[in-house]
Amino acid sequence: MYSAVSEELKSLETDLAEAEALQAAIGAIMVEGRLMKPDASRGQESATLKKLAETIVLDAYPKAEILRIHVVSSDWTTERVEEWTDTTKTAWRVRVTRGVNAQVAVRLQGECLLYTIFLHQDTIDGAVYLGDSLGMGVGPSPS
Image (tube, rainbow, N blue to C red; front, top):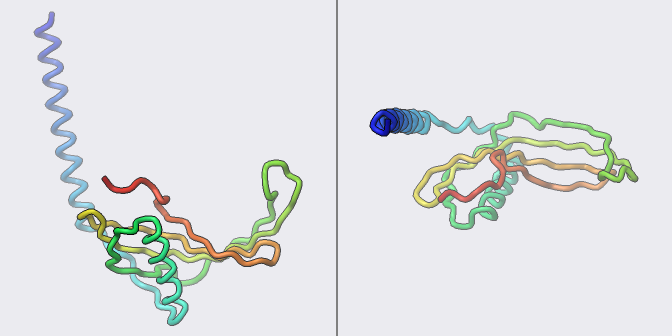
């Protein structure tokens, strides 16, 4: 009985090893083909947005080496929302969010990584706030 189970376990372990090797090969091919989207130049505005993207990444990963930054959105997206300010539903606000996407290529701990960041400007009840959202989240540091 034990020998049959052992043989089946060995077979499953062999299948798992083959699947993991195939997955690693596919991952390597995907990384080779990964390219940044073209930069949508905006003159001085582009320089400001790129500096903001650089600051965001370096705040999250101080040891990162910035390789390249592209503002990839051709134009600002705008969203207008009327919403409660919190779950108590005691205050109502109007928020207008304008945003663009940027991609930041970095070298971090020997790996080249590509981050996509949503750079946004919120106008909430007339006050203006700048913000960011890392497309992958600030996320775990690469190990």
